[in-house]
Image (cartoon, rainbow, N blue to C red):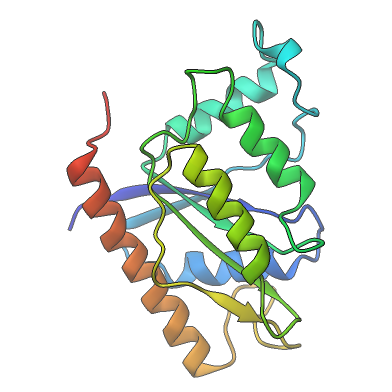
Length: 190
């Protein structure tokens, strides 16, 4: 089975984020052929095209981290029926300057959790629109809107509900298959 490097973004910057717990569960449940690593974005300044001629080192490192993976996974909450501002800022940095979009032809998937009954459905729709514009092939099925309840996922990523654990495991297996299909059509450039 082909090995893939997957970088993941945790959309919330909160230390106790339930989406960070979800990310830990996904890393634990990922198939062996997925090498998972977080791509942090907390230290990025607010993007402005004034930086385009000379990105600060933190932004260059951020874009290099994306370039170093085969695919990206967004694990994000929903804030005010959209994505968190920090995540949008990170996407802006990664997709700029024009012609140097780090997401072009990079397979991606979105998942998120929220205490609300619809999970992160509306925020995910916004993120899908953004990633579509960024020319990132997006896994549209299986969709994953996880309603978080206390005790569902431990701080270490252990899932307490067997059906949820199976769903998340299957989600990651589907993502692995999706990455393979996309990279067959759009092989990575050396």
